[in-house]
Length: 141
Image 1 (cartoon, helix red, strand yellow):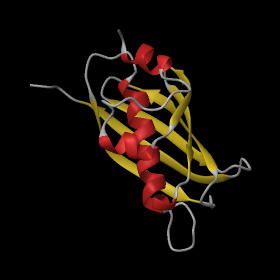
Image 2 (cartoon, one colour):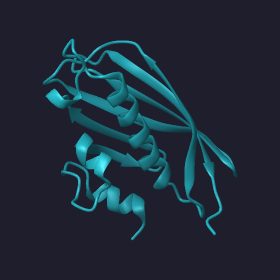
Image 3 (cartoon, one colour):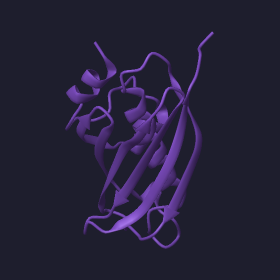
């Protein structure tokens, strides 16, 4: 079964036991899965906040990186991809207990490079972080 079909079957469910440890720790729930577009939600837990009680920037970056990577790995392509960069702008805040929505979308998919954008929005729908990332298709030997 193709990875995109596996992800589509996970919509609305908890991450499975075999998910990578960081994915399980983030504990997001997929809400929409399409080729080149993924939406998920995550509750901001006490172990994810900074001293001000706000979603830590490092967690925001990890969440964006994880959703972007998951979405790109589900594209129909013959090679795996690795991140070349991840640029994150922190623009707002989400508080402990809030549910945030994270979305990733492919902007351009070339033979070698895939350019992707991602956003996190708080419970009020306000943009709290946006990211851009480039991923490189690699040869596995």
